[in-house]
Image (tube, rainbow, N blue to C red; front, side, top):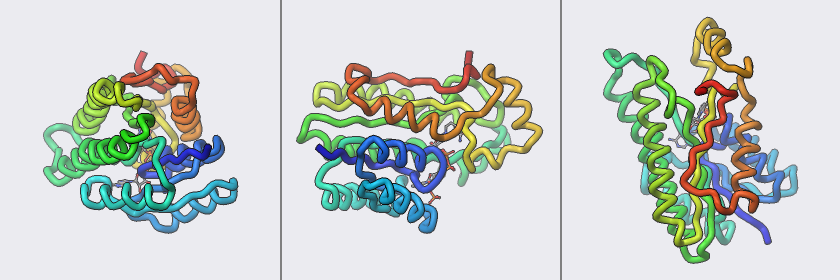
Length: 244
Ligand code: NAP
């Protein structure tokens, strides 16, 4: 039977790779994004060319009303929801003394509230069929102290904690919740990091390379498969050994 996945922040980077990886495994895909219409259309076209159905949904995950409408539209269009990948996130590094209120609010709204909004709506759609998988994209920064990332680390630490609690609450309903915490992944998010700093980070990764978004996507897709049916509440750190 066909399966349906909604991936937030799927117009670029890790979200896009997750959308394509799940489409390759037979899922129809709801492609959420915030602003980049052209990139979202590219993802829809790529998935359609794989023979799967894909529809783009523009919605700011920080906006509860927009999220509610998106989930209503997705279920109307696709008939059901099997997988949510909570991926849409932002990073805006600043040392503690330099943190601006608007940046702090935006990070908390998207990286924490956005995950709650989507997980809540997804669970509501999954409850009736007593099955579903929610994957939250966290970060190695949730378990590793990186200077300048107090806000980002706090939001990703929150993702790990919410994953465990949601998993406990939703397990009796047949819904599993897990997190994947990537290390350095070559996406546009990393473009903001100065080259000298990137070289320093590279030295710290025991595998001596950054990962491709597809390596995160393959982990997410595997977690969505039946092979991991008893796993819930866990955060898988996928960082080439960085946090060891
Ligand atoms: P990215 O390349 O910057 O892409 C971000 C995606 O999120 C875009 O599709 C963007 O949509 C969307 N987005 C941003 N704010 C949104 C909002 N409010 N509502 C809906 N969509 C929104 O990011 P990435 O590197 O792929 O990161 C994806 C996730 O992985 C994030 O949660 C990030 O924290 C995590 N992560 C990344 C790395 C890394 O090294 N890259 C490492 C660890 C964890 P538009 O294109 O429309 O703007």
